[in-house]
Each structure stands twice: as C-alpha cells, then as structure tokens.
Image (cartoon, rainbow, N blue to C red; front, side):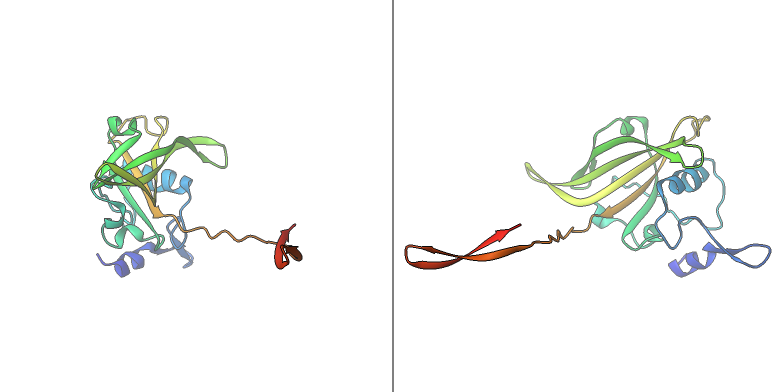
Amino acid sequence: MTSFEIQENLITYDEDGSVKLLPGYMSDPTDEVLVDFYLKRRVFAQILPVQIIPSFDVFQIEPWRLPGEDGKIFNERKYFFYNTMGRDLESLDMRVAGSGLWKVVEKGKDVLIPQNNEVIGKRNTLIFWEVQGACTRRTKWMMHEFRLVLLANPSKMENWAVYRIFKKKDEKKVKNIQGSYEESSNNNRSVRIYRGH
C-alpha cells in the first residue's frame, strides 16, 4: 500500500458526513494517544481502518537506516513502529542496534489518561550511541519506547511496544546581549572593551 493510499484510508466520515481522522494524524500523537489508542489496539488485535504504524524490529539497524516512509505517517521527521519487546529486553539499560547501541536515559515514566490520572503505560527514553572501534559517540537520535502497564494488559498477551524515533534538532542558543563599549588605554594604546549588563 502506498503512502497516498494509506492517507486516503485514514479519512473516515461520521453519519452526518463530517470528516473524522484517526487520533494524532496530521500532528504528533501524544504519549497517551500512542499507548491508549494505538498500542492497546495492537495488543488486543483490534482492527483499525488501516494499519498506519508498521511492525519492525527497531533494534536490528541504526536509526538513520530505518525503512521507508511508512514509519513517518504522522510526522515527516519522526518514525513510529510496533515491535515485540521481551521481558529481558525491558530490563536492559543498553541495547545493541546495528553498529551502535541505544542507552536508556529515562526509565519507566508514567503515561496517564488526563481525565482521571490513570496510569495506562510506561515510557522509556533512549539515546543512540555510535560505536567505532573502542570509542562511542553520542548521536542526536532519540527513542521513546512505550508499553502498556499490566493493569491495562491483564491477559499478558504478546509483549508489544510502540516506538517514536527521531533526530533531535540543533538548538540554536539565542542570547539577548546588552552592553556597552568603553575606551581604555593600556600602554598608550586605545582598546575597546565590551561591558555586558
């Protein structure tokens, strides 16, 4: 199925003819939407009009080699994938992927339903490190790994996770500098000195 066909299938209509889009489409799905709508439906095999988040083992290659545009259906700068996540993998703080590894920097952050503050999932944040010989270099690639909590998944069906993978933008620090220049003489030379305030 092409990206255009997928996008056509994302648009459905209510009985009154008004357009109805799947949650998060044409924007960034929130953590809650990824867990409570998409991941829960995947775990419990509930069918969506179109399978917009593909299944893929995100730990087999480096993030810049992730496949195709299908994983970017929500946002052109972010990938979204489902993957089964073994219990042993869940407890690891480092996970090998291609020629590098993902390191957990934040573990087990609660994902809440805002209306009642019910915890429906957990989010791990990982950063990709490229390995070159004995050296490792931190990259700008980040991953959010979401899973359902056991209360939301009492049957312990396949241990699925949903992933949001993206490259962090360069943050240009813009400083509002105010100051003045003063003339100073040193050894009969005139020097302009900047005095910030």
